[in-house]
Length: 143
Length: 131
Image (tube, rainbow over the protein chains, first blue to last red):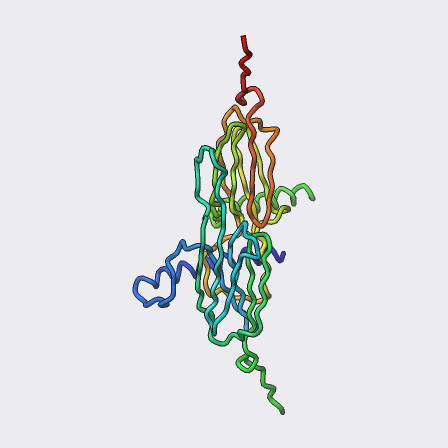
């Protein structure tokens, strides 16, 4: 069941992406926004407590992934070597090969000291906590 | 009674599949050939071994997979390049490949398929003896 909700959430991602695409024609976009199709693709999601970034970069050596955070700018850089052996006949070469770097603007209220990154099945998952003082608190109304 | 239920369930599943809401990512591939066979590499980030399916049906090779992503409860999307968790892509194979000998390896979301040629079509080195 948990998996179903994953799909739903990705459908939501899709809807928002389409909405955003529709708006991009008229509204100004982020100065650091990169054209669609840049490598590696990523998703960003948020909850009141944290921001989650998912970077889809298959076949990487985790040691060669360089993740840094400066204020609210997250930089993901690395190099992927996927050269076919010499002397073969190449029919398709679609997969990304070479160096890459992407800079992502995250919400302003993240805490750069509370970052966690893991790499599993070709997805780099970075979790950044939001600053506590900015999290909304429920205020109890006394009788 | 239970049979009816099963039929209904199947119908619901079919309706789901036909509703057209299902979209697939077409994974990027590299394909190259050497003297003994063809190598196919596909990027399937987020797909684990359990969620990967490689099938050969007659002469069609189909790679499909489901990405499983850990998400905290109540997460809302801010930005997305990837809009679906389904991967699928098919290829037509040729007769000289030995379909029983296909091997697959998945590592860090990178699939490597090796499709060897049949032994009888592999090039043979012919030794020239001195007269």
